[in-house]
Length: 101
Image (cartoon, rainbow, N blue to C red; front, side, top):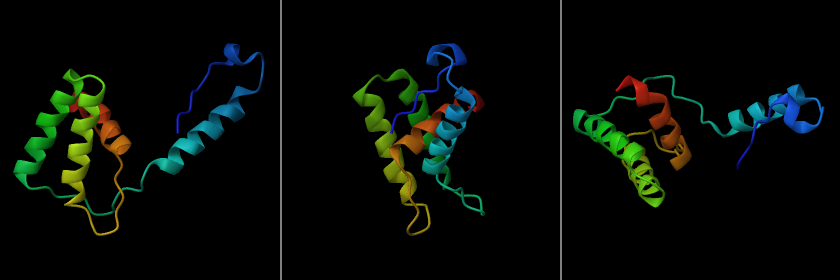
């Protein structure tokens, strides 16, 4: 699902505050609820995540998607049974952690 947030001038005077609220609500509905207990990863998995994150930002197109898919598969092995993790979630994690590594 792709949601584009627009500024007030681009909608021809429509009430964008309501549009923005609806867009944020739709996005929040797709973001999974984080676990109450922090996820503990083995050091080799965490190092592979950071390595692949750096490769993700150097890659383009399908290569970046493949890297995110690989990490989603690897991280799912360490989540509780029934937990959902999408490729979009991994991409968001990469973008949120970009400046912290």
